[in-house]
Length: 320
Ligand code: FES
Image 1 (cartoon, rainbow, N blue to C red):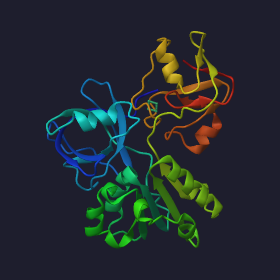
Image 2 (cartoon, protein in one colour):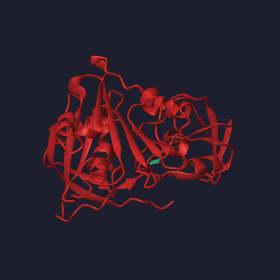
Image 3 (cartoon, rainbow, N blue to C red):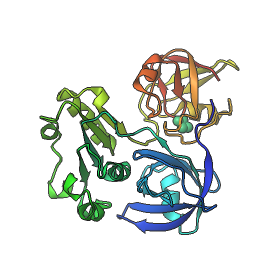
Image 4 (spheres, helix red, strand yellow):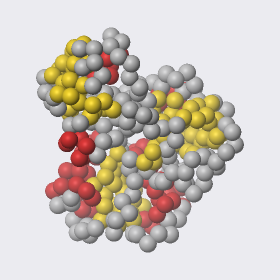
């Protein structure tokens, strides 16, 4: 399918160590033009100069200021290489290639209240959304959880900025825990809940919202992550060549294809965000783990993302 992103060159103009594990990078265009417009919740795909790594990062800077973008990058222990590259090799002056922004985590304009819940590095999309919400008519609140005081990235800015009265902090090591049950009890019927952070937090928010009777359409989440390793092995059939490949447990369909060079696949993000590896399903049912397709699209079983999806059926025939 057609690539929805355009790539362009940027230069790193500032690097800041925000916490022991999180760095903030400021990016400016090489040609001096303003950055493409975006809304809070948008992400860009960032590639290293050699094109070896490609990762999605939320834009955290003010959408009203297009002189630059800012992203926050957490050094991941399980890094596929992207976050280690950003932390160890990127410095002021480094050139990177980034995509135009896309928003899969937008604020719902129909919400009567926005309840934002961040865990750790999951704070970044909300920082841009706070700028969008500033001065608006819709009430909002941000609940920001992190494990210890030194890991509270951008906490001082939040405490001192215009949103201070809308923000609550929860710090594991100080036993200041976020009580989701209490938070969801009595939430107005038109309030929307947004969560970004580690998978356990996202799972807890989704389960807590369900238990509180909050409809799925009022719960929004985002997590950029590699494919889950669990799931039984299955066979994928490439319909155009007739090739059959075994996709073992812990492997993605994309890896199975690339391991034997069975077909050429365009794949920009490799984490279910960009949509470039979308492929039609001809037979069988996929188990979707991407952020790109809507719930309706996933249920329709028309297509899947090769980089993260697995199969619910022992055999999956795809249009490749
Ligand atoms: S490569 Fe981006 S969704 Fe698969």
